[in-house]
Length: 294
Length: 327
Image 1 (cartoon, helix red, strand yellow):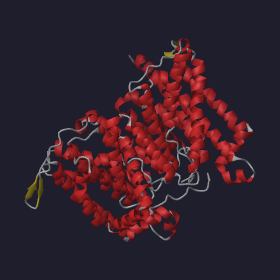
Image 2 (tube, chains in turn yellow, orange):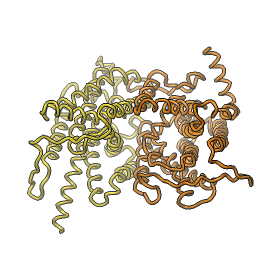
Image 3 (cartoon, chains in turn blue, orange):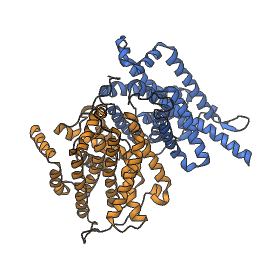
């Protein structure tokens, strides 16, 4: 009996890790966009939802999961680009609340449109056959698709790290989130960088959506609680800190996973309790700088 | 035409309490049906509470469902579960719960400023939602709290029945009117002036020697009280407290109402609540997707009419630009 529950616990830790990966992808996008543009993208959850729907439809259409996995985030990223270029850009220089309010309105439109187009009933999204089985890890069996989600997220994080740390554009992004005025004084057109970062951030939300689809189902409201929990992850990690987003994302995944195991009723609540404790002990989050953008 | 409307709006803005009592005395008769009138009053009060914090103190809360829900559940639980036989005690229980919640959550959220504050208020409201969801023996959980009795109102030995639409409307009219007078009193006091100073320039208010955090917390608690009263009244109106009272969509609704009407203006919240509810009422005849239309209208307002309808008429508060990072 003891061995059995230990295996169950290990499975839960892995499940928490997978959920943590989805949190990380969402929180990194939010944090990237916030760090550079001080825009809190409330529509992030709706874009996550659209990623899942686009992925589902593309997979059904082409029968090729890998193609869907590439195209769906690109489509969501393109939508993000359009949002930044034609709507959010008008609000730069106004109150920091305005982009939050606008993206709130946009997310309402997207959720309602999804309900109208694809119906109120959720869709079941089966993972591709190649990832359908379970993998024997020696001490337990774990669904191959979930291991795949962990691997993909790891790869994306490494690619993002290389992009931000080793390329010139990455250098401009980092400089731009530290001191935009100075970067522009050096003659760099930041508006194109904003566009790019908004595209990357929302594209990551789309990727999180298609990855989550086969595990959590596809429905119009799927992004609503996710975006709030991702906000919590960003706050815990420290606003604008990418390392913070990764650490806090994994941590929150474990918090949810382990509370689901020991006290299922408290699972949703614990996330907020952890946030309150972190805020009391370290008000700027685990990796945040005090006073940044308040 | 426009200047005439603006002049009229300005006169109303100069005599707000008087205007409130005159206009809302006849308000039910101006609507397509009378049941909408009490709803406008209650949501107007809800938006008024939100507006005290956002429009006058400059703190954007995305979690005002928390105090609305606490007011509703406090009133509902006192009347339905604890068998309190008096409306006044029921509403008092709601106010008490809302003010306690406002104090505790306000204390936490005011640790941070700006956009962090908005996200923290949202997170705490969701926390309350999940707690209420799981405390089904007190709150009814997913089904909502049912069985709130329709009591008659005992006042100075006279009992007034509240089971008619108009009877209940005028009961709300009196209480919301008192709240409006209370808000006017708060805004005209030195405390109200400090609130607006914080909104315009919080650092300067600190430099002037004001204990800004204490003032913000007080504003938060006052806001929670107005909001809690709205929640309590709505529990009486519906005789049910749906779990959605605490959900983030409720917080979003009050944000939209206030901005449509005009944040930082005295009557903006009522104008916005009326616009929102009449739109919802008319649109839902044609389509289930009315939130799509309201979401689009709201987005257009943020882009092109950030001061809202009443703000545009009376020259209300224009939100201060952000720090010069992303200009």
